[in-house]
Length: 514
Image 1 (cartoon, rainbow, N blue to C red):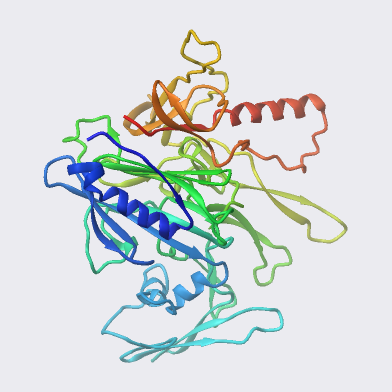
Image 2 (image 1 turned 180 degrees about the horizontal axis):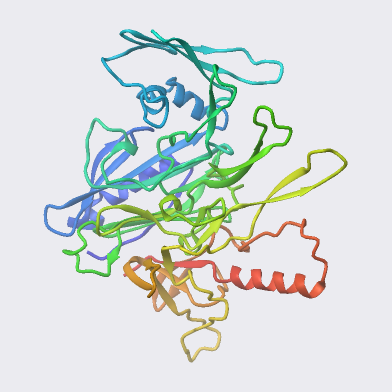
C-alpha cells in the first residue's frame, strides 16, 4: 500500500510516541500494512510495535523510547539501583560482570537499600560525605576468608557530558514481555564504550580503569533535544510509513532531525537478506572528550581520551546531524571498525550489527606554557577525518562532492530540480584489491546534488518532499578554533572556502508521497 504522510504538532517526545503509535497502527490509513502495538510503557520498558517482515507471517519489532538524562544524577541513580524498574545494575554490571569485579553469582542474593547480601559473602555499600577536596566516594566492602577489601569509586559513575533528552529508536528480531527495551533480542549490538571511569581497591594506590555500561537506550540512534524540551515548547513532526519502515522528521524551531527505522531496500533478493534491519537517527549522543588525570607519584597529568554522551543542541559534532555525514568518535591512531559507534546502524546479512560512518571525530590537544612546570592544556574539536580502514560507509557522501552541481534541465529558468542520489550503505573490503559491496538503500531518502536554495516542504517532480539540512541551516562542516597561529590570508581563505564548499553538500531529501 502506498505510503501516506502526516504532519502534526508535538510538545514533547512522549507525545511524539503517542502520535507515532496512532499513525502506524491505523488501518484506515495503512490497511493491511498497519502495524500492531505490543507494549506502550515509560522508560526503561519502552514502546514496541510489531511490523511486517518479507514473507507472510514474518515479523520485526520497532522500538521507541524517550528518556531525560540529567548529568550528575540520572546515571548514578540508575547504576546504584535507586530508579524504579532498575534490575540492580550495580550487581549485574559491576559486581558479577566479567568486566567488573567478576565475582561468581553463586546462590540468589538479597538487597536492602545499598547493601547486597550473598550467603558466605557480604557486600556493604557506604556513601561517604563530600570531603574537603569535593570527592564523592561510594565503597564496596567484600568480606571473606582472605579478609576485607574495599572497592571505591572516587567520583560518582557518569557517562553524560551534559543534560539532555532523547527519543531512541530500535529494531528487534523477537519480543519478550519480561525484558526491558534495550534487552530485547536483535543479535549483538554495536559496541558502546564510553570513556572509562576509575575505581580503587583500597589496598592499591593505583586506580582500575573500567568501561561503564550504557544507560538504557544509550547506544541506539536517537533524535535529541535540550533537557528543557523543544525551544518554543512545541515542534513540528512529519511521519511517513509503509509496510516495512518508518521515517520521522522533527523540526525544533530551526533544528531539523530525522530518523528512519525498519528494513532498508536490500541490494540482494529479500529471500537472500532475511533481516536487513536499519536504524538511523540524527544523534548518537557521542561527544569526544579529553580529561587530565594525575596518577599517584606523577607531577604531570595523563591526558585520557574517550567519549561521553550529550543529545542536546549544544553537541555540534557530526555525531549530531543527518545520516549523510554520520560520524563516529575516535581517539586517533589505527582505526578499528569494531569500536565504530555512530547514528547509522544496520544488520549485515550474517546477522551482526555494524555502525556506518563517513567521518571520525576527535579532540585536538593544544598546550602552552605560562611559567609553570605543567603546561596549560586546551581541548578543541579537531576537523573531522576519514581514517584509513573505514569499512562501513554511506554513499555517496563518503566521497568529495564539493565540485558536483548537477541539476535536471528544465524549460523554466526559475525552477531548480535537484538530481537526487539514493542513499546507500556500503561495505568496503580493504584488501590488495579493494572492493565495495552495496548492502541496500534507505528507501525514500536522497542526497541532493547541489547547494540547497530553500529548506522545508517542496514539490519535486510533482510529489511532496522535505529538504533538510544537517542539523540546522547554515551548519558548517567544521568550526575551526583560533589556536592555530596561521595568519597568512591566502591560507586562511583557502581553509574557509574548503569548509564552506563541503558544508553545502550536507543535506538530505525525504520523499513524503509515492
